Image (cartoon, rainbow, N blue to C red; front, top):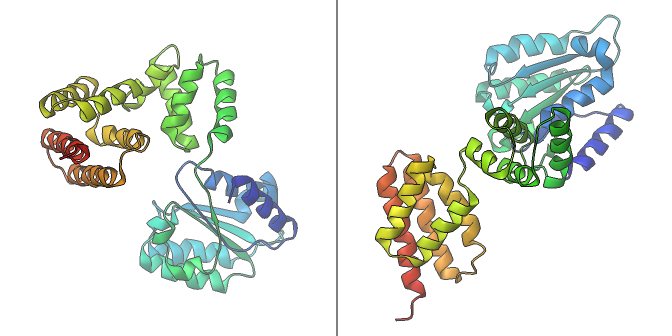
Length: 305
């Protein structure tokens, strides 16, 4: 569901005074917390916001004591001169312990008459089914480039940051739909360099430059094992690239090469094994050799016997 659809539905629920318990989930930086905070301010206004809304970050306060004491006390008390239901916002609720989530389940039922709960998380699978079933779920998908571009240009103009078209496109590519990362990349690049262009954005983020990835892909597909290994090691050492980031970029190129399904499946399976080994602390040099070996064997599969 697009963000415009979610916002439209929430506005209708507020206007009809039929707001249910909510569960907002999706990747970071997609506007989940901003949406519910803006909705709460529209419901209560600035004057009543503090007395009618309780905001908790569950990654800091996620134990059962917080649920039993702080949340229960807020949900159970009525404001003397304020009408309407209270709103309890639990950010990062997927970090709550199972005991706290089970305790919260009963509180949601008990205080439905005078309180509404909004649970926000990145991974809905970490929220127990009993809580999910008590909430209306909305998934916030990663933001599309056209949704981010206008805001990026607006902020760059307001802050008088010199930004080229290539720099803006690089930020959008690296952010992968995360608005928070867009702003962080813009700020970091503008502080490190006088101009926000493509090269400076990639250098600031530490992500491999597209030209380097194309060169690595070329040697992997065409050169002997020793030369391919030397090129990748030189790029990673001299530019400070992480091998895992290099492989992530390689996958995007692989999917566009039109390789036979059997070869593509073999190479992707090999890359996943290398990434798994890196995640568990394997040596980068050995895994670089393993990466090259995967491509050498993949090329052999395409050579007629």
